[in-house]
Amino acid sequence: MLKLEGVVEHVIYENPDTGYAVFEVDAGGTDIVVAGNVGSVDNGMSITAYGYMAVSYTHLRAHETRSN
Image 1 (cartoon, rainbow, N blue to C red):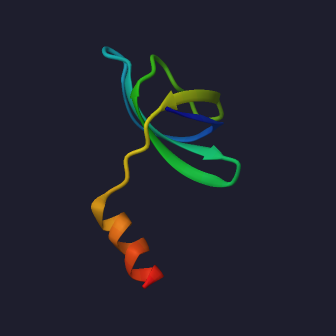
Image 2 (cartoon, one colour):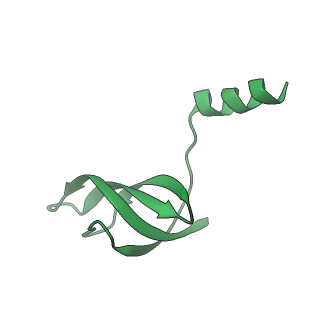
Image 3 (cartoon, one colour):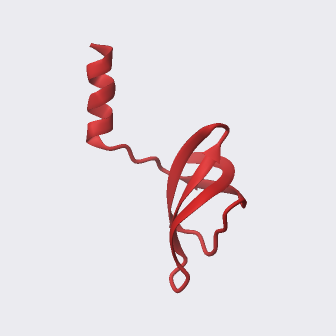
């Protein structure tokens, strides 16, 4: 399980009824999109999140092609 610390840059989607949100986090200069049941989230909020990172097949293939 990964630990992510950073500042919420942009809330993409939030459902206040379920607590599910999708938002961008600036994690030390790297923007990462986070999704999950987090309760409430606001731009500028400092967060610590624990979870797993999902990477698309296309993203993996791009790295493989670049290294060949």
